Structures are given as structure tokens and as C-alpha cells.
Length: 248
Length: 320
Image 1 (tube, rainbow over the protein chains, first blue to last red):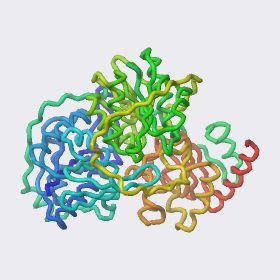
Image 2: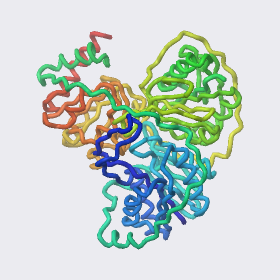
Image 3: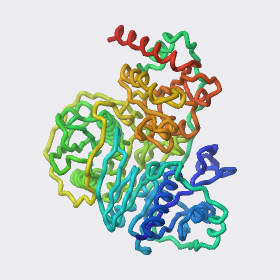
């Protein structure tokens, strides 16, 4: 089985979010970038398929050279090789289109992406990719098993979960549950040394026009200070929620 | 040219999010000088959508669509959009709608923007405001394609009753091979889901153990709320993973979010920040959640929550 794991290069959760150029660009100054958490669960599940079922695992990112350390980290975790499509990630559609070209060229059976990235939160790349390449698609995926060309997946739904059967070729929108947080791997020194020697191929982009464009960004209005209510005066809280916040 | 809106139902009954997306579609239709057509799947009382602004309903009744299937639903909605010549399609932010929307976007060659929180600031160019950076910012986003798909964030627009009426037409789209088959569904039917809830009551490690969740459930019942939990609580197995809210769990965008014994790690706050009013109850006045909350009580949950339940019961009895 040939697996491709899509890796989004995102600001760490604790990053301060600021914008530059008249609030039109994300300010990367001082921001630490990491593998998108939803992708990391998928990558770790892919390593399980590699170790238990002899799958090969490649990772891919659509972005400039600044994303290479993130791809190297994925290689240090255990992926076999990495591909970087040399073009900025402009919108979900354009990224999906680039990925579709990589999947077609590489003949992958299973593509694992995160259900969404934690920066733009579009949640559209895996689904668009599946539609473009004519593969089956399961998102919000919290469990995945593959046997030959058949697959069984569990999808989180509003208020519960759903078990589905499907077949390869398959695209997954993964999240926590594919593996647990305690299963995530921190690259060790040997992994980091090996990652330096693994292939990281830069491919030039295919034609793809974005369909959407973030014209400007804004931050939420600063929140007022918390109103503290005395623990012995619960009546006041009920009154505030009713009369002031109007939520009960 | 009408605005097409996909309205979700469960066991024939419209979800609240369905009424909200119709209300929202009506606002866009008014801006663009057109009307709203809704698509329903095995829903009863389709004409009731008229009250929220739909003037026409394409009613699909097909047993093959009894279980949600993203590909089949997307294909049916695409066919409806083509029939109506719709240039704008509106969907909700439910798990199902977010699943089908990217497929629909490719099927219609449409640009898709998710997590939209307001009516378009302009319809030419078509520009909407969406949340980004896990609720730490908004992005004003232009859709440049001929057909546009807008995914509305739940609880962001509200319900607007217009008192209109809708004509209902049967609609029988052709269905593709679905490729993904539902084997089983495991869902608590007697509880409000986190996605649909107007109020969410959430517990953290401060509650000390799963045996203490009785008061969380009772408080939720009094408020008609969904129950949720922090990540450590689901990692410890005190509560099911489906209750975990936060960055790697479910997102919450309720009107009222009550956090009990949750310190407020940044990953947790990122997932619940879209909630309008946040209340925190915690013994530690230095807990980061107090910086994110609107109302706070520094106190022991085991003393505060039972009192809150009693006071809310009395309040409800008075205001019933």
C-alpha cells in the first residue's frame, strides 16, 4: 500500500496571531511553525500501517522552502520520503489541485490529511482532493483499518460516531482518535540524523487558480474583564445571565 | 438564480441549524434581489421553511438517502443548484455539511468558504467574513468563482421569522454510487449534541473523577444543554471522546458555555472561543480561563454547582 500524508505547516497553537501590510498578511515574525496537529495524528497512523502492514509512507506539503523543516520533522518521525510542491498555499482549492497532481503521479492508494488545518480552518482540502481524483472520502475520521483494498473507518458525527465500510483509493480527513495523543512520536536523534539523508523532492506546481482570496484580516474586539460573582451569591449570576447576557 | 440552501433534518424534523441557514440565505437573497430555494432530504413539513424565508422547497424523499452519504447528498444538491441556476449555495457547519461541501464545490466548480459568521459585506465582489486561526482572527474572504458556496457557522446569524409561505415540489435527483457505506451509527438520541446545543456545560479535571459527573448532567438538564469535557478528562477515560471540546476535539459555538473545573489551556480556549457568553467556575483565581470568560466564580464546584442548579430550577419555575 502506498500512503501519502498531507502535511500542513502551521503556527504553533500558542503563537500570537498578528497581521502586517495593512492587515492583509499573517505576520510570521517570531512564530514557531509545527506539523498541523490533525495531520500528525494521521502521520502516526500511517507509521502503524508501515510497521504492521509494510506500507510505504510519503509526506507532501504545498508551500515555499520555509516549510522544509516541517517536512524534515515528518521524515524524522519515520516517513520514507517527502515532496514539496513549490508554490504558496493560496487557498484550499489550489492546494487540493496541486495535491491531486501529486497523487496521480505517485499512484497512491491511501491519502491521509487532517480534517482541517489549525490556521485557516477551511476543512476543504481532503474532500476537494477526493472529488478531483475520484477517490472515496471519509472525514472527521477517528479510526481506520485497511485490509487489502477494503477499508473500515469510524467517523465522528454530531452527537456520536458512525462506522463505515469503503475501499481504496481513499482520502481520509483525520483527527485525534486515529491514534491517541500518547501514541504521537517525538523524533529521536537517530530519526533526525536519518531524516537528513531521506529524499525531499521539490516539484514545480501544476496550473491552479485560487477560487477564494482572504482580502483582509481582523482580530476580535478585545474582551472586557471577567465579571466576578461571589460564590455565596449565585442569585447574582442567574440574574446576570438572564438580564445582562440574555442567554437564559 | 435563486439562492439554494441545504436544510438538514433528523428523523424528518428540521434541525435548528437548518432554520438558521434559511434565515441567512434570505438575507443574501434580499441583498441580491432574488429568492430562496431550499433542498430537503426526507424531511416532514417542508412548507414550514417558508416562515424563515424560503419561497420554494425541493423535497427529496428517497430511502437510499436515509443514512447520510456525503457523495450522494452533494450530488443531489449540485443537481438542484443546476436546475435552479443558483449562483449561491448555503450550507451549515454541521459535521455532515462540512463533509459534503468540498465535494459539492468540486461538482459545481464553485469556490467554498467555511465558518462564515455574517451576511456578505458585499455581493459584487462576493465577500464574507469567516473565522480563522482557530477563532483568534477573522478573514474577510472574497469568492471569485461564478458559483459560490457559503458555509455558515452555527449560532452566528440566528433565526429570522418572516412569516412567508413556501411551495413544495418533489425532486428526484439521480444518485451516484456512494462508495462509502454506513455499517452502524452509535449516537445518544436522548441528548442534545454539542453542535446543536445553545448551551454547553463542560467539566474538567477539577471534578476529580467520573463519579462526580452527576451534577454536570443535572445542570445540563436544567439548562437544556449538551455536556462536554476538557481533553484530560477524555484522555483519562472519564468521559467519551465525543464529548471532548477544544482544538483537537469538537468545536463549540454555543450561546452560553459553562466551564466547571477547567483551567483553560490555550488549546481548550481555541476550541470554545466562538461561544458568545462564557462562564467559569474554578477554585483557582489564577486559572487562565478567567481571562477568557465573561462571568466567573472563584469557588469550589462541589459547593457552587448544586446551588446553581437549585437557583436555576427556581428561576425556571418563576419564568415558566
